[in-house]
Amino acid sequence: MNLKKLLPVSPAAILLFVLILAGWTCSALYFGHSLVASNKSLCLPELGAATGALWESHEWWRLLVSQFLHVHFLHMLFNALSILIIASSLEKARGWLVLLAIYFIGGTTGQIASVWYYPALVTDGASQALMALCAGMLVLQPRSKVTWFAGLVVAYR
Image (cartoon, rainbow, N blue to C red; front, side, top):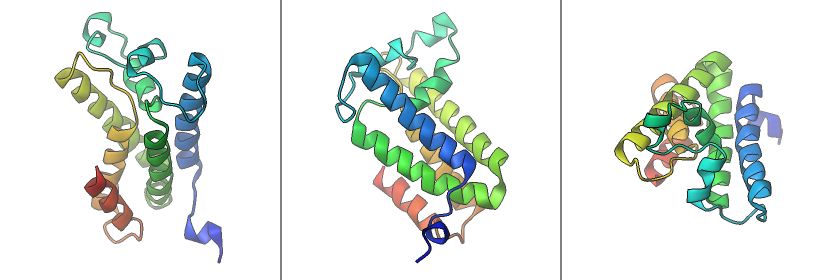
């Protein structure tokens, strides 16, 4: 069986996957943790995670950076692999620009909502961007073989 045909991975999807893994690796190295250990949520603002202080500090870059930081290894791995699968399908069908627009607009909007509603908590992770990609699959590619997977991801969340 041809693995490339089974999972047609695309360049922008690989970039997002690598950025998520790099965010995890950098945070583990920065805090001196094992690569499979959990990070402390309250420490992640040192690396760019967003909190309610964003409204006073105007450090808007945190809304982007926080999408590549995670607290738990398995959660990060699930997000990264799901994004790789769904983003590859979207990129092949609609192009890298549409893919990145859905990812960053959806992810940033989700981070803003999280910071707005829970200002005392640390906002991090790619879950918001993953949900935006799932919605993109369900709306833009309803007959794709990957759409069922996007639906499972939404149901699981």
